Image (cartoon, rainbow, N blue to C red; front, side, top):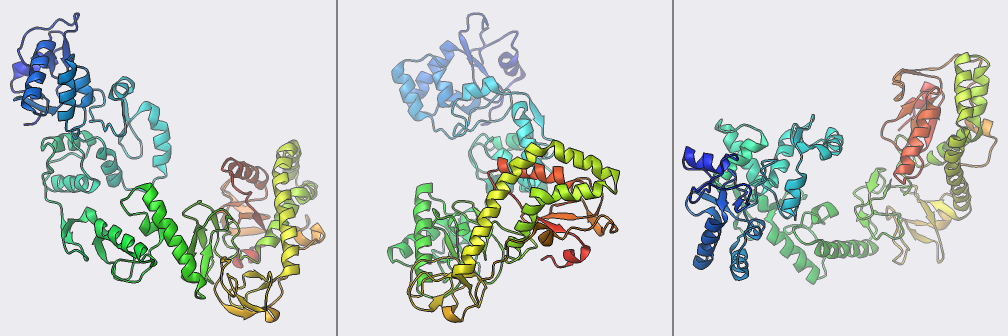
Length: 564
């Protein structure tokens, strides 16, 4: 039976707070003496203490799961409910063992069932439960204290509203169900026109069926054990055949390969497993860590024995490596272990629309611009245009902020110049992928990305070559006069128009020097906004503990066509 009052009289006796009556014996209750308890079922049935004690003793004697009323309300009492009833210790202990723990307690304020795995103190939840306000983006109800943070995240969340509704309901049903079951229930009820798509209607409709899911879930056979499994228990591998096996066989396959010292692959083919696939295993975090560490080591060993391309995280304290599908391709890599982002070719902070060879010179030009040339350029422009005089005054007024930003850039510039000099003196280029390679010792036989005789694996394409015949590295950034490096437009020249390009700060058509952030997918400022806009961007990077971003100075539109 669902939690439903059997007669109008019974409903009124349990819900009318001005004239309380016991739901069991129908006797009047005195609100002042407190000799009654309200149960957290859907209709908040109220019982006198005597009736509750007698019913609990009966449940204990018959070894039955305690409920609100043995014949009229099937709400299973939680451990929290039991703890509120004055009982002898032996009876209380026995009842706590009889509580199945699957049914969740009902909060009369938010009208949701509460998952005690996420909220250990139900009483505290009820006390702090605010009025719910719908989010303007997903329309789902959230407490006022949580609404602002939720809305900020929800605004940029690409998850569909249907999926958000499913995730929201997952922890608020009367009995725990899987996400796939809730999704299937909504689809079936909506198809029959029996359901409103608001969370309360869905939860109430699902509560009618108790702990038994009312529909048969779609199933398919596991490709290994051939047993019929729900779709939710089937994993689809990222191999060419998209092999489909149950999670139990997936785990068994990994353990078997580890016991045999093999690299982890799809259970039915030789496609190596990547971190994203291993993360889908339904095991403890500690066990997952062991499996991932094993795969990293086996990938390392496999690469050391052959000459295929590999990518290694540049974080010296991180062991992550992965085999590169195309070792000559430049793309953004995010290490799945330490979350460091870097370029697959040069291992530096990832750079958009810019080659690895161009980055040092762009960094040098940006440093000179921030150090001295911005002030020089604004001074020259101010003599021709009064609008620049205002901009120059604002620049001088914020000298302290600029100096703080320039200190970080100075460190980056000094490291760049030292690095470029060292590479020019000690390094050469791989003839295949053009990565910078250093020979530490030994003969001239080289393998890009590792020692020729094994070990010391780094990012590389695996090509074999002779050190003496390889091209010397030429420093991309060298000490030169700042004016020569920047080659700023002269004030008397007509202002350049970058047709079709708008400033991301003022939203006006971009004229003059264009400032393009090479570390962002798309961020461009005009010369009138860049001083403040790039300063704000620098502060954002500092707050995120990121390396300062570099801006490319584009003087004429022809340079835009050359961007990658």
